[in-house]
Length: 293
Ligand code: NDP
Image 1: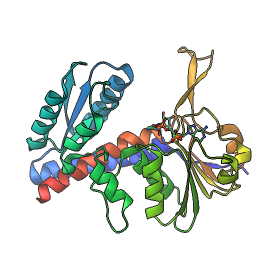
Image 2 (image 1 turned 90 degrees about the vertical axis):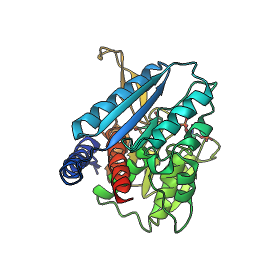
Image 3 (image 1 turned 60 degrees about the vertical axis):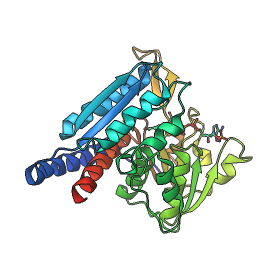
Image 4 (image 1 turned 30 degrees about the vertical axis):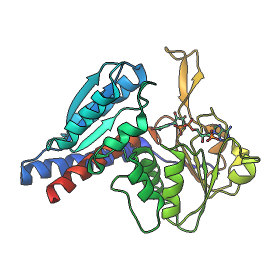
């Protein structure tokens, strides 16, 4: 069997288009344009690229982005003061503090400072707490995990009653994905670096989400026939045919897994494009909430 390829690029483009239409409607009816403040500390090249991509995609849908580029050695109080100012600014609906922050800064304290109603990354401990609790919902779902869920839903994967296995338990991907799957009534197993027999777990999975950051570690023989495989991993693999000397691959060995799975995301072109699309959706949601106040 060859798996159906889940086209994240196309699903993300559809979401982006929906957001664009909603932003135009908001401008027409309320004369209001959603705003996203991006806060970048230092000059980490990957973070700089991510922030630039987010600003570009905001512009494409008509969301105003307000960039704050701060020096690497900014004191904690100054950063928290800026976040406080953004909390109070009625033109700012979402606040995105690009992580990781330089080592001298207390990341959790900064995230705690963000107004819950502007936490479009969904990393505020209260939002994560609500995600974990039965009968509660967060104001915002973290963007990559949200993207994973949308990919499953748009591909027609039955989540309720399924056996779901999540590889990885990080705060930004593995753990929230597991909590979302559980909320959607899957029976969830979380695997991590101390899991003894990873393959024994993965072979039971109707839904397998890989978020471990280990290049092509999940091979076809670890996949249950017909499973939906969502590959969050982004890893570099040497490739002399490419100008930069490498290409991007996931945590799943795509070639062998696609022969066994029922549906699978490629890397690139799977989860990656969804993350920013969900950020745009969260920013729109924040603006809608502020108008409803
Ligand atoms: P982290 O390094 O924070 O977490 C990795 C997790 O994988 C940990 O829970 C770790 O276990 C577990 N793990 C590591 N090695 C193994 C192993 N050999 N067997 C089983 N579990 C293992 O990574 P992130 O969650 O931040 O990211 C995961 C991947 O997703 C990365 O490749 C990253 O680049 C990618 N990513 C992609 C995004 C996108 O937009 N597509 C967004 C964010 C991340 P333990 O807890 O025991 O250490």
